[in-house]
Image (tube, rainbow, N blue to C red; front, side, top):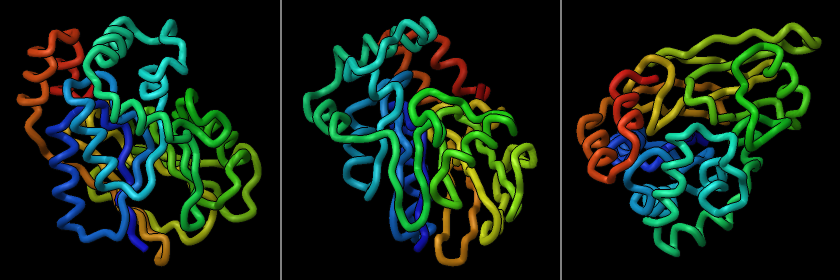
Length: 246
């Protein structure tokens, strides 16, 4: 079974539509979303509707939970908190109802899915080998998918490996991993707000029969997404960062 793994869409309609077009061309069997459908961007309802229509599995992210009032935004940046407040004023009841049905973790086809990390599915950023070690220890499955950091990357521990022996790297466009052995944490990167220096939208193609993972980047109308953010009156920094992938 081949799945398209998407994460951190953040109400960026232009990026999501471009990724879904690439997903259609790839001819995958299912679409999985790791959460954060809303926040930062200007099209929360449209993005949520598209995910609801296309994804067979979807998690809830910390920005989704903040919209629902289930998470304190005091630890959010000023721009992120402003986006939460704006989104609460704009979204439809249908969007709220859908997000309220979601959980931050799931298991599918022998793969564990978490919005952030297996040991802290809402908040933890997995960016170091120490964090990856802890995540692999907490992961019930051999392969795990994580989002939240907005960086396309992977961590792995060899069969029989012990604590302190995880390795990892940032994944560039077209990188292919053979993951039939060992333990793995895979982050597809962000659809709507990449932070790894590449402003193109990111997604991951996962084959759970051949156990292969392929990283993809998709160009999209960044100018249109930035203009929508500015037109909505959201903080300008949220538009500026799209252009540099930070």
